[in-house]
Image 1 (tube, helix red, strand yellow):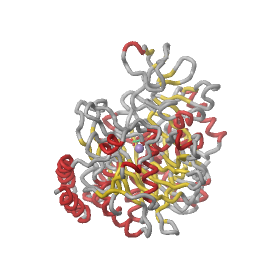
Image 2 (cartoon, protein in one colour):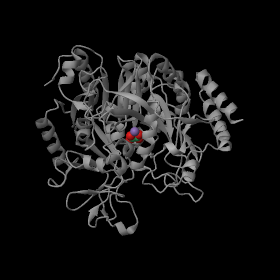
Image 3 (tube, protein in one colour):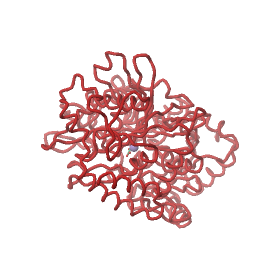
Image 4 (cartoon, protein in one colour):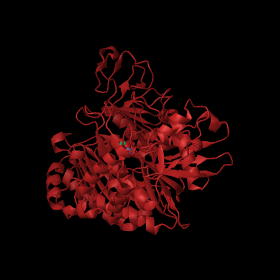
Length: 586
Ligand code: OXD
Ligand code: MN
């Protein structure tokens, strides 16, 4: 039975049901009873596999199709009326043409299946940040995952009332045909359509599709920001908590930083780090003129391989109950394993494809992009402010990337405008594991290249505008945990020791420490990075903080080439910043 009298919801569900022709429609109310029933149905059909109830209570296992294990950027579209508005970094198609194409693919795609109607909220229902969505899907995996990743419940309909202001999301697995797979956003229609995939990043529409692509578009219209950022709080021994938000391209340890455990020299004094979010931040000006942030999600959709009690105990412990594991190794005792969990690959287990797996044959047991989906509340270091509808005040924004030599361990931008420049030139160098070519620089401004729902040039302008609008904006920094020595070894220990850099960042925000001005911004005096308990000499620290002008001149050519893509949409302030950098290097 429909759980709402909202006409816009009802007529849209009718219309989509007429198109996809499901056998029945189930309205999700968010209750534990209903979810348990649906989970059991998934277990009965094999879509889900129940895991060991003693070790992993409430947990299930799921495999996606072999051809369907990652986001598909090449098949992800932004369909706005004017091609120019999508910009040079998004795929675009005329909305009418795309609707016609998709209608063909959805026609009868749910025949013999159930259509689930999932009402969900991004951020706490009723929060000034909250935005509501309804996802229609023919996948039980999507229902149970959305119930972890977002706030699902009939109270969303109450908050929505009669308003048509919700994001429509239609997902159908259809035939899982990769040639007919599309992940499409119609920002001007508040609509997302995903077809022929069952992989989380393509089908949990609250995440990248809504909370970044659609929300970035809405944020620009409504003077707020949707960013690909973690949020964490640092508590000092007096109990004061200061917050920062940080953006990194993939494979830079974002989840690890979000759940960082400080080194002993800090914990013994009473310092703590609290996780507010691991992937997405929505930011808006608060009544005090500062920028406040919420994590609009309710769970973590994290990469499993490499997650261990050593690298990230908080993430691993988050997955110990009521979680979903996708494409990892399934052990005969109904528990799971992945590369990097420990040094004991199991015998008698099934690999991510469901085949008997012999670790000795050299193949990987878990897919490199295998995932856990875990409730945020499970995280031992989840912030007490996680559910605060007002969010948390942000003192610092941190950008970062993986650079062998160019970027120092940390530097601070001179001001907001320069900080936007620093975010716009974010880049990572490819590692041997990722592709054949090592050291290729990939630009990923603000880590938003695959997630911005409109023209990147307009997005940068929006950042610049926000700096003027917000009376007391955060300070902006850049970090690089990945400097290599001449033998190719990491110089900085990373992981929990990154706390030492975060401490400097916070000290700068509160005017507690001086810095040295360089061509690219302010770097720390080596004495101001606390290396107590580390085997790092002052000379090594000086090396970590050097700015090599020759490398930065190369960087300038790279930036110039990258900026050229954006034509006259490149904000003049960023062109000016590039000129300033050039001049500073002379
Ligand atoms: C993610 C991503 O899955 O950024 O969070 O790709
Ligand atoms: Mn992400």
